[in-house]
Image (cartoon, rainbow over all chains, first blue to last red; front, side):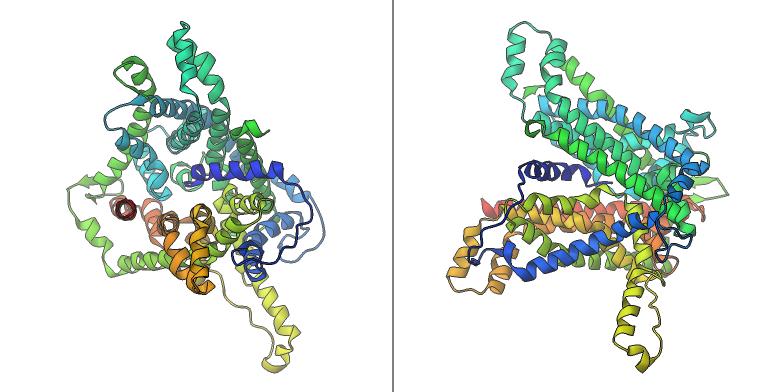
Length: 298
Length: 295
């Protein structure tokens, strides 16, 4: 979960470059001493590393179409495990839970994260460095410590465990917001860093109130950052396993927790199908997030 | 930037929600765990806070100390493996042509978007007795007629041992190492490398005496980014290690689930927190000394 926020900038750059990418033949100049990018042995080593990274994921996705219960050897193409996963009530319920949690967590953490970003962008105040460190704390501590803390907290304060449907997800949602909004604030703050403060001053000079300046000058500028932050919060919540594992009860199973319990028993095409769906959702969400992060290039 | 005194109302409106949320739903829960780590278990659900250090002492009993020690060396080994695997990738991406760079970077970043549970699950199909590694080895064994010499191929037991855990953590956390390395290699002033080569140093010598020292900040960031989550990993040893290859994370999870010994689990998770803070402090110290040297 953790390091994602820091990588958003690198992703943004990679996408900006992709837009400029034009396939074609390269000129064959003689190999210079610093032309490491064209050294064959280095290319082979890196190609092998990429194959090692991607082979397991690609085979997982391919074998979700495998017509075999034991799923060891390829026995022909089928989509029946997608239908089966869809009709698996437990899986479907877990998926609905995950989406509900992710939507609520995204809305709340985007609002709180944006406010923190505005605060850090606009104001000088005593202890600011310490405050920034405090905001980064949920990002740096190990997931399991956060999960355990949430478990102890909700158990000790006697958070009601048996509530009707959307409310029984409240503990998980609260935990997700706690680790999501610091990420949102990082993304939104990165966007605000490019804002020309003179626009804000001009708006004030022209007689706009604090709220009008925010609503008509700052907010439109923040919007791409807000969308990118929201999409990041959405994937963080949808993907989280460790923290949810400790905060969820028997009636509040999320998609990753359900997949985990299925995985512990066996490797089946049904799990592969469910995993492929989750991979596609998160990858698409992140691509959208990156697109929104640098709108100037679109 | 303006002083908060100029618009105290705006300041407080912006500051309150985030601060309150983080205090109530993050710091207070952590404080609960911290206090509980000084408690003792009295009954099934009864925990008394006696401010004893016995839970921390229990963590250093041989049984648990062995697991802590193992988590440390596995994390250290994984971090080293990640450096060795990530350095060539970061190096190639940093020196790639402007056309190839964005695609390579995308390939590096893509695994971040894929759920860690799913990536770990994908490894089961690779390592199991009838998995891809064993299939490949069997095919090689039969192709080279080794079955005629030594009898039929015996599949290797690759899952549910330390090997699987080390391979799994390396696999999942390797991208964390590539990005900080890439960032520093890209910013590296290439004229230092040219100078070194012009002055007659070999490529190998230039790499170890110029490139590696100059990219040390990236290496240190990468070490922190891999070592901390590796120490705290729970899912990977749980799925790939089974009962034979447990790490601190599994012991913590067990105290809060099946074993139901919360004070002990609390103490262990705070030991993990202290280790994290220690690693971050080391990095801050390192970064401070580095910038002092440059000035």
